[in-house]
Image (cartoon, rainbow, N blue to C red; front, top):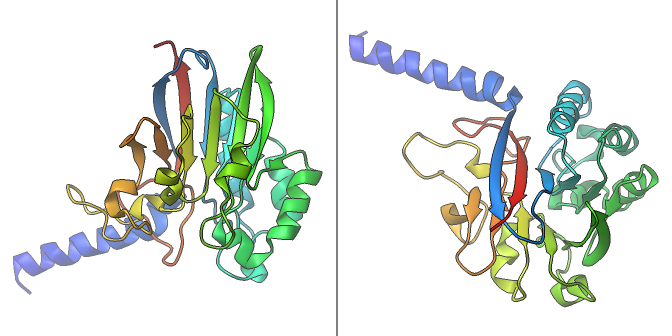
Length: 264
């Protein structure tokens, strides 16, 4: 075996081990600062794409604990709590909801395609029973630091029917929109303070200095992750917390997203 081949084998084994055993089990905080005079001083935590296996208790506890340590004023969730397409492969909805109820801040959520592929109705019931409001083409007006904020939640684009007009009914600026799938972006005509989305996992496997190999969005790598603003509206797309299809992550760490609003 030549030296070059040995180096390639070592690199391959490192990438394999790292992407299967190390990075999927890591967790980092990604911070954004958004200028908004009406929401300044408010901190939002955004978590999405958990993909929780049946006994992922420690991983979920770690996510909740890290989120609470950031002292957010509100926790917004982008769905896909379920893993795969079958109930037998995903965490019991009641246990999941019990653990999510340990957030120290009010929590609001939408559901994702994997949630509906398993049992979206049961998950909705358990989340509601544990104090987490589920939004689907609906909204809720809350008070954060003596200011009204409308939280708007859209239905999942792949498994449900998105109705933006219904979701936005009787809302006004400031409003924050949660959509599991970022591809609804250009359908949102009204001005919003922020759009939060997931679904893409950042591509999961990203070779350094290149674009992700696969992004489940019709807009490709432009909607892989991060802050995007092709129109007046700002959207943050999270890399998510779990994995789908292949249980790997490389150069694409699971993340808890923290957004701080500041004065313009």
